[in-house]
Image 1 (cartoon, helix red, strand yellow):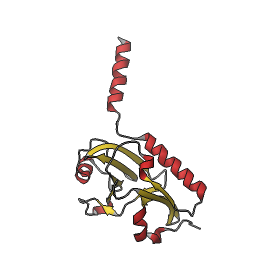
Image 2 (cartoon, rainbow, N blue to C red):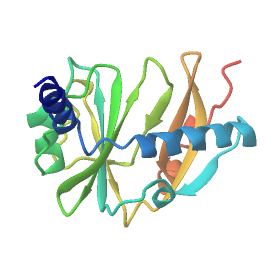
Image 3 (cartoon, rainbow, N blue to C red):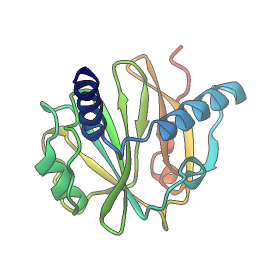
Image 4 (tube, rainbow, N blue to C red):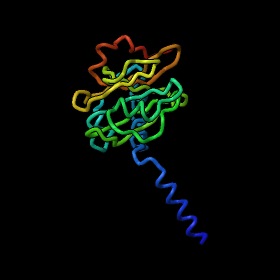
Length: 179
């Protein structure tokens, strides 16, 4: 009887885990950060976003939880798909990948622990930039090449990731040293 109880608990834990959270993607991004740091803190590193993904996707959305968190309804509205994962906590950024309007993967970043920022030139079509909860959209077709670079704001270095073509409108952000 005790073995059956343990089995039930294990099955419940497995069923409650989020199958779409992608720790491998997080590891690949962390590895890219280390690689970029080794190449030089003032360098802009170019890479195809597909080199980090091992799944099919056609668009991605970035959410910043800085207004008391972002919930299921807000996320679902902005991605035009059903979101059943966890809320985005304050000071966290979530990158959600979709394929044919279905969530296929996502990754979270705790901005209290790591200074990282995903950005795009394009806001979600539903975004009204209300209360600082901007939602950015990435198109796999249009945003194939990405760059990463260090930026300094308020004496804090942040590692930015964005589509390469966005750099033209954000060139002033290339301030790698806080010294």
